[in-house]
Image 1 (cartoon, rainbow, N blue to C red):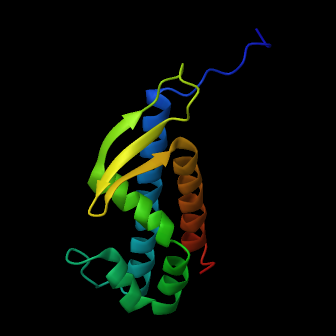
Image 2: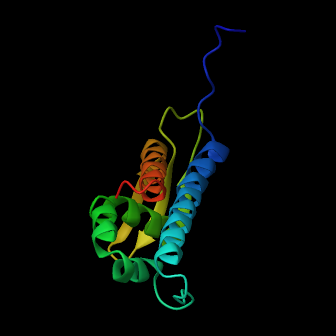
Length: 133
């Protein structure tokens, strides 16, 4: 029926939003890794942060990307290291959200924010891949 409203987001939708953030982060790191390997094929990337390596190889490009990403990095780190809860009741009328525990306390991220972060990470990945940084 065409007149039926779209169903409200549920836990599966919320968890998909979390997964999209983490997957887009992984794809971004793959593009960074490719740039490092293109610039310095013999560089050993097994130790240390990928971002530290990139800063050493392409400092200006790394700085341009990182300066616009602090909020994205923050959300990704909270999800990766502090995810501890979620609420997504389609009957409540409230937007689904996840809860992360950080050193400063609990933080909530609504589903719409997670979707914006995933979209921004996608744009950052394309910029890195296409050399627009």
